[in-house]
Length: 267
Image 1 (cartoon, rainbow, N blue to C red):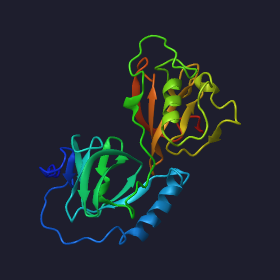
Image 2 (image 1 turned 45 degrees about the vertical axis):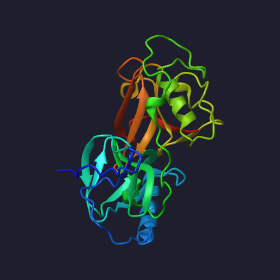
Image 3 (image 1 turned 90 degrees about the horizontal axis):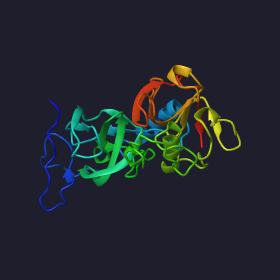
Image 4 (image 1 turned 135 degrees about the vertical axis):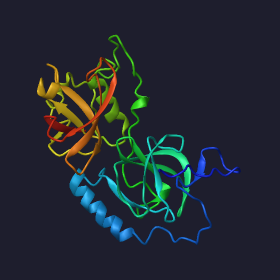
């Protein structure tokens, strides 16, 4: 049975909770995040080898919740459903971070939440990462895309039609705080790698890259396809966020093998 929801203190705001765990009891004072610092640094080095550049590589940490199991939720907050639990001491890979419910852990309060898998989130307050700061880059929120359900042909102002795979991928790159070059006005999806002076072509993806399909490769159409890489896993798979795959001008996400796209583009 997954852990129960945390106790909400009446003197705190409604979205502020102590922990996201099974029980709340009197605790002994806890030292700050130094005991696991060396382990976290070593694990981070391993994660860098698995997912690519250290600038936006996945981070790592250890569940630390006073010995209790911690809820895994479908989104970054205690208002999202519980999808499972992790035992105290479990090692986790943190693919990206975002802000959500304010939660108290052994080291204090924070509203940082860690994405540890597709639709799997844990409160950073209950993860020992060796620092109080996020250890992975920011997660992209696809729900913020301005054209989530466009059934006609509307220009998005960046050189693409809203709802097309190119429009969403360009928007994602533009808004993820990772890219240093513009993805705009690049033409059809199969043309995105043409100008090598404005994009770097790589074979090993990291979060924030654009996966590119050549025409007719693994289900792509005659103009190719592009999708945003939102997570990179150690088992040789990646998470793709995309539009216009399977359903006209609609959002889709899927986990695929690294070798499925033709290449990866880094802006």
